[in-house]
Image 1 (cartoon, rainbow, N blue to C red):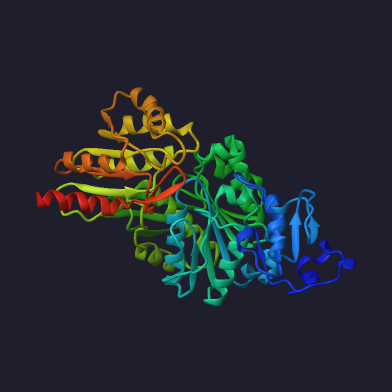
Image 2 (cartoon, rainbow, N blue to C red):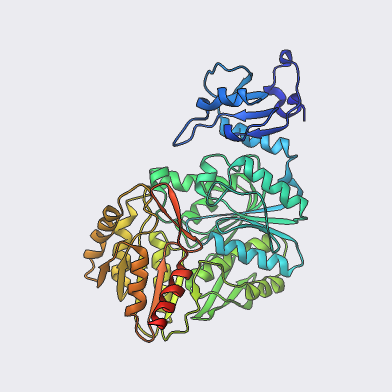
Amino acid sequence: MLASELFGSLWSADMGDTEITGIAYDSRKVNEGNVFVCIKGYETDGHIYAKSAAEKGAAVIVAEDKIDVPARVVYVKDSRKTIAELACRYYGYPSKKFSLVGITGTNGKTTTTYLIKSILETAGKRVGIIGTNENIIGDKILLTKSTTPTTPNALELQQLFTEMVYNGAEYVVMEVSSHALALERVHGCEFAVGVFTNLTQDHLDFHKTMENYFEAKAKLFEISEKGVVNYDDEHGRRIYEKGACGDIMKVGLEDGCDLRAENISISSRGSKFDLVYRGERYAASVQIPGRFSVYNAVCAAGAALQLGIDMETVIKGLHRAVGVVGRVEVVPTDTDYTVIIDYAHTPDGLENIINCVKGFAEGRTITLFGCGGDRDSAKRPIMGEIAGRLSDFSIITSDNPRTEDPEKIVREIEEGMKRTGGEYIVITDRREAIAYALDNARAGDVIILAGKGQETYQIIGKEKHDFDERIEVYRHLKAKENK
């Protein structure tokens, strides 16, 4: 692609023209003829590496600040928006070649994407997913890797979309994080449907206030043709009242919704409920237990209906959907107690999973959890209080401490725990904590390993260490057998 085609009005005609071979924001990955975009990050600033990129053959440098480099420079006000626009243009606007569905909210994004995928595949559609667990189309894991945990950055996202098109995607369902919306990662994307699940405290280390957090989430509906909101959530009602996109479906469990779930029955095998829509009642079910799973199901059903899928297919798709790794995931243990892994790492998520388990546990509900380091510290005592109030017994341990002192994180959680009078123990080493839970479980107990979910690592300092809770459980039980 010629520079004039890629940059349009940003390109100065008197600079001549040149062939652009790609786009990069990491100077280590610059190739001859690339455009290098200087991004200001949290740990470093791309402007520092502009000279290195030019020396490696970058044809054009995009910058916000004045730089002196041996290459053509295009100055812009917002390099994050610019890289998104350039990536869309370079890859030929791939998101226009399929129907794009975006899911935002504090909790439930991953499960909702998989429920929508199941419904669309039941309708015979080819569907891709971009999210926390994996990037896939059908059963194929895609090659493009994301450097961010939920929503890829703008360049990687357009590369993934291109791969989706190549693999025949008719629909792409993606998780859209508040970070992605605030940092313009999805700038230039066109969403057929935007979905809002809920909003509870999280990421205040980044957003600073709940209002900023809400406004970031709400941006999804400014770039969506249609919407679906959890109308039981006050923030969902605010998005509806904003009317950012003209056609928003209200879903939930309470009166006033366009699509509502009633007569809910929950067991360890899943959730059954009626869907009420346009005066008709339909029996529905999902193979995931919990009231929060019903909320995810009505959000998914609403998205499918907004896409024109019939209710019969919606019901079948919800029923066929299997559980998501790390979400109310039962670990096969062949014991008289149950071990469940769940990604719950927010106050609301922890409360949901504990209440879910208490609904079917025959014995005690034992909650093992921690909080991530270098993240919103205000939620730590809140989560301690929730676990202490709702669990029969809690084990406070490490999650991903990152560069924080694990003992400090544990103490902050303990502040909330102490207010409840709940029974608990502190075992900072997560491996030892899991072993303690397994050694002390009784018949009928349910052990919740909360916070890690699908993660197969633990971040200590700035390094990732192999740590798969499923393997930890198997290893410990095997060692007990051999004693």
